[in-house]
Amino acid sequence: MENLLKSFEELKRRNLKIDLTRGKPHSEQLDLSNALMTQAVEPIGENGIDLRNYGEPVGIIEARKLGAEILDSNVNLTIAGEQSSYLLMTQLLLGRYLFGLNDNPWKDEEEPAFLCAVPGFDRHFATLEGLNIKMHTVDLCSSGVNIEDLRDKLSKYPNIKGFICVPRHSNPSGEVFSDENIIDLLKITKAHDPNFINLFDHAYLIHDFDETQTQTPIPVLADSLGALDNVAVFTSFSKVTFGGGGMAFLTTGEKNFKLIEKVRNMMVICPDKINQRRHVNFLKNKVNIIEHMKKHADLIKPKFDLVDKKLSYLPNEIGEYTKPTGGYFVTFYAKRPIAKRIVALSSEAGLMLTPAGSTYPYGNDPNDSVLRIAPTYINLDELDIAMDIFVLAAQIAHSQSL
Ligand SMILES: Cc1ncc(COP(=O)(O)O)c(C=O)c1O
Image 1: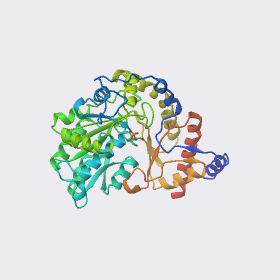
Image 2: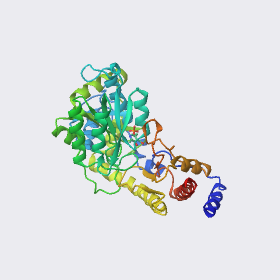
Image 3: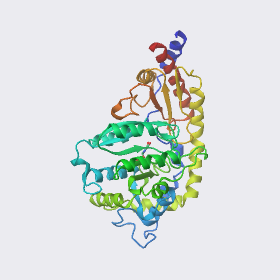
Image 4: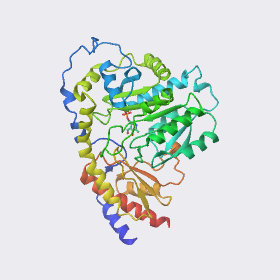
């Protein structure tokens, strides 16, 4: 312990300031899309509309086609939105909350609730909480949702309206859901309630480091089960081109589509069609996008390898960690309830981590054990020091807890 503390004090003296909190792209990744900044756009779109004017609240047709190609969805049921997938998700939730799918808005219900896959994404929890939707957790397992836990929670809690998860390179724990798992999830939830909505946040749909993890597209699986209105699948170009400056996509069934169209007509007279067209010109098609994403992977993968190498120094009795095949995060599972302590110690040495608990609804990690590491935003040198701090903090926190 003495040696650990001595090394830690040395790191503290360096007055470091390193940010590992959010899954943001590094500026080198943003540079991959710089051509977007200077591209001239012809004013008339594919179907003759003037891109400079109002209109097309569900997106220009060429952008919707691109979204449908990526999502493997029906173009008529695919929205190309602006800015972020998060906006589309909130618009759909608002529609269900205010108007409902069959004139049965959640706002009129006793205590509408959602199931949330854990560990999960803090911003999902914030939105649901903001709408006063009660949240219950469902555990993840290596193949996706823990189906036993799902059944248990559906029978245990009343008024569950939907489920939210990240089905590929899950944020933060990296799972890639198997087809069987998704099929089970859809069958069980639809049988529970024909209006049940599964929100699949495909933020990392095309963000692979290796391409071995195949997955049948969710719209295809849902269609084959007659469950298109039981899913809403989202993705965006926020981590393909520019954060908040890309395009976002949603596909769902006809009823949900009409609902979100209604909400968008209330608040978005038109998306940024010039930016949509610019993205279509730049990214062209799915094959080209996959090539573009390989360049991202080349920049990101060494960072994940470094995190893996550093965390491998920690003995198993202190904690275990994930080895994702894509996405933006590594998850560390401490064996003892020391996550908050690791964050506090790291902060003393100038390393900012996502707050402990943030991967659970209401910030409540029952075991105080899960930490999310987001290695993409900083460069390799900084990451090297950051992980030294993390490893030391974990060792110290573990020893102190004994
Ligand atoms: C699971 C997940 N969904 C959504 C987002 C944000 O995507 P967008 O910018 O399209 O809202 C992120 C970004 O960190 C994410 O991890």
